[in-house]
Length: 159
Image 1 (cartoon, rainbow, N blue to C red):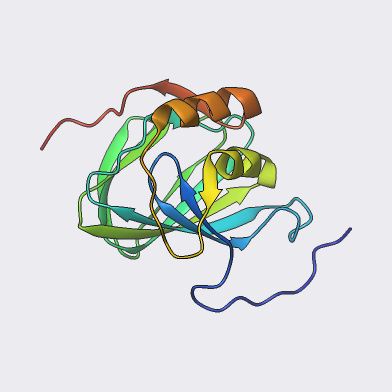
Image 2: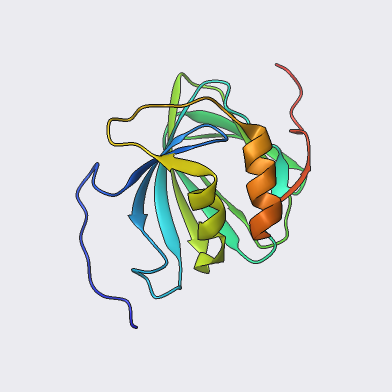
């Protein structure tokens, strides 16, 4: 199967509540890109923080659409705002924390091998309903899929 042309408007795409916090709107799935990549928009609230982690087989690029975050990629910590981005190549440890009331990110994952992690660690929602944060589920799905390796707690110092 080959990738096929597609167009999605703002707000279109499957909406899923990620157990680690964040409302995902799936823009392109691996099935739609013939495995080349997947792409989702992530809406997060202040205080959302990821553990120190890496993706062994996926390069992750994050583009900030709205908000302010502290990001640590391989020990390089920086404050990033709308229009900023970061690249965490496969195997490189990284984490982020949301500083603004809301942040919106575009997550581009190449190749699409990590999609199973994000899908299995989330639940479908049609009305933007947000469930509880469940990092135990995130760790379980990470171990089961092998798409994410949780390395430890977030590396951020409380501001």
